[in-house]
Image (cartoon, rainbow, N blue to C red):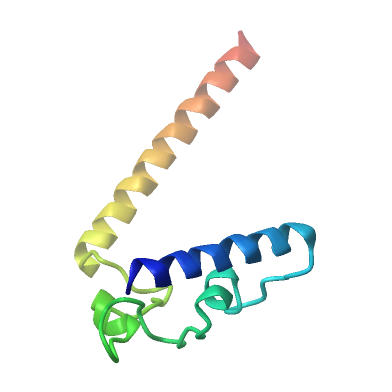
Length: 106
């Protein structure tokens, strides 16, 4: 890209930003200031500047979303961590209840 082309796009971005601040240009979805200034829409599911045909999954080497049940920890470690948190929570609650009972009967 030449510096003249870059300057032209920068001027368009400034113009669309001004229009957006005045309410005459309303960015919507993929039609934002940058897309309008460049003049070509984004392609859903692709990563910008990563080369032709590179998908989000290929670029990040994983699914773009994960299920709630997935974890980076192996199941045994997850179960152990969960039990530690339960034990700490139970200990904390027991201490608080004991202190409150002691204060109540003092």
